[in-house]
Amino acid sequence: MPTTPGHKKGRPSRPQPGRGRPHRPETPAPDRTAPELGPDGLPQVSLLRRGVERWQGGHPWIYRADLNGDPGLAGGEVVRVTDSRGWFLGKAFYSRQSKISLRWLSYEDVPVDADFFRQRLAAADALRRKALPGEHTYRLVHGEADQLPGLVVDRYGDYLSAQFLVPAMESRKELIADLLTELFKPKGIVNRSDVGVRALEGLPSEKGLLRGQLPGPISFDEGLVRMKADLLEGQKTGAFLDQRENHVMAAQYAHGEALDCFSYVGGFALQLATRAQRVTAVEISDAAAAQLRDNAAANRLTNLDVVVANAFDFLRDAVDEGRRFDTIVLDPPSFAKNKDAVEAAVRGYKEINLRAMQLLRPGGYLISASCTYHVNEQAFEDMLASAAADARRRVQIIERRGAGKDHPVLLNLRETRYLKCFVLRVL
Ligand code: SAH
Image 1 (spheres, rainbow, N blue to C red):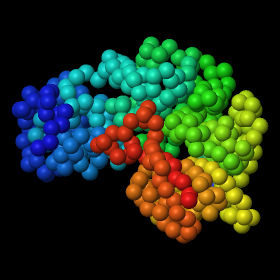
Image 2: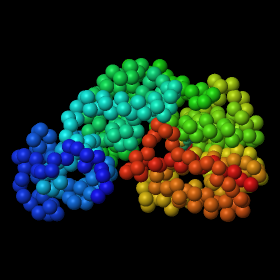
Image 3: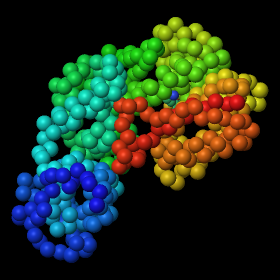
């Protein structure tokens, strides 16, 4: 049997005291009206065998179908997780409405209190200090991958922007804000819990200032470029920090005439403009395009044109007009929120990548990204190969990249490996 942290310690070899109502392991328990409590007074949730196997295999999520009956809880609790005989397996956050019922917190029987969260937050920060020394802007907490399920915190220098994505984190919002204040002394903490996934948890969309002040858009550096993002009104927590390392990398390949599609506030476009002769940035949102123009002006980059347009139309027209580029970046929003939409997503990716390959001069670079988890790296590479074949171009893969080091990938939760970023050279 593979070793999991659960086998190291904190997993008693016999049932907990006060338990012992015997029933056959794989017969679901009847739905309860009153939750069962463990020795420390926390509610207990027991798993069917498949759930136990997932838990011990290190998967941080347990689905409702793998619970041994309805635990009769309101949702948002820290619970003791047991097998169907009452053996302690660990502690988790419980969600009532979501299909994901349990989110792993610990294999050990430790109190889940302020100190628990303080240590996890400090550990997340310690990783960034090692992986990205000297940086002031990074994802400080990446949810499950930092053992803090349902919590995202991005740091933009003196300001933090947080998302609370599950009921148990939502109900600890003030505690987390207090701990972030104590540990990092930010000038302001923004709450950007205005995201669709909250609806799956029965939580409303919320946005506002949690602590301190926010003087307006916040400046931060990416390589030699100074960016500005609106933490309250911008997309995500204000910017796409997962692409920071890729933005800076893009400057390395930029030359000649460059095109950045799906630009947002210019993460790629401004980097391209530091090296290329001329850059065209295509973005559909007026607000993002306006911020992009401000960002270009603040960096005194005058070789950049911002076009407010649908990138699909722009690319099609550019091919029809016989235009040519030397460097192209494609960084579209997610095209598939679920498995059913994958085929359409791949078609969308192929359309824009095929056109980009047609538009590139020999020796030109295509930096092509996808943040759709459901289209994995192999499927994305297959799509690129098929686009190259249809475009009748020979294409080299120069780099296969992902999100930055501040977005760790949890091997047991492949959902955390969502971002692909290929650097290709068209011959
Ligand atoms: N490249 C950016 C992030 C892009 S996010 C960065 O690295 O910072 C995707 C962007 O595409 C969003 O700003 C969104 O407004 C824009 N967008 C969505 N659909 C679009 C379309 N059809 N044409 C052009 N832009 C689009």
